[in-house]
Length: 293
Image (cartoon, rainbow, N blue to C red):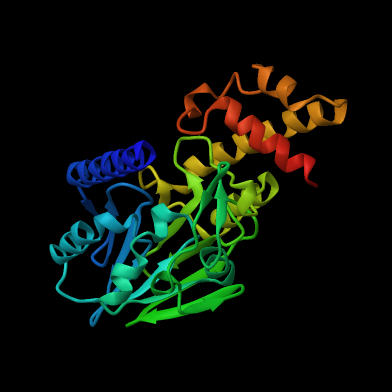
């Protein structure tokens, strides 16, 4: 009986926290061009392209926020969401899938996203249950996909083993807006999800791909943070390459993970990048990534 009471208490506490969190979250909109918008709330930045007959949407944050997100979209347009791209499988980018699919959105992703969403996963050492069938992408691809929203070409391209093994970039060609999701954490150390196929080499290659697509005028939407430019990514790339070089030297010397994490010199020039991913966490991710090669 006591065990049951404890379970019920935990359930109600978690439910209360979730509801409180949902009430506190505000969805904000930012107009980038006449047709492209960014929505921010809790989770990955959402991209919107407003077509003549429908909305092309990028990611959808958490399920409890779907009504707020839909309401925010209604302040921009009355057109329905016709296509929804998942940039990778993490719940802060795919949590609203079932809700939007119920409203008629066709969900598209890289094939690895559907694979990972279809089975239980491990994130930061914790088990994540498989998504319900209603939340799974219904169209998948292996490398690139091209959409045409009216006269706007939309390029969706896969980058290999960066943040995860299913990351994609979405480029609105005429609008010159590039949504890069968690292949770039604006102003902060990146989260490299090694359990989901991410790697430091893939992340660096992904940044280089972003820079090849973008020009000086491209508006770049990161997965988290503020809309930015190619110039800022140059500094980010230098930071990642420097950290990789320094950690690799330690690995080649035979240093342990503990020794690398305790080596404050590695990240001493990049303390401003501390965030959810701390200096210790980025060193650990790079170390583990290099040791797996």
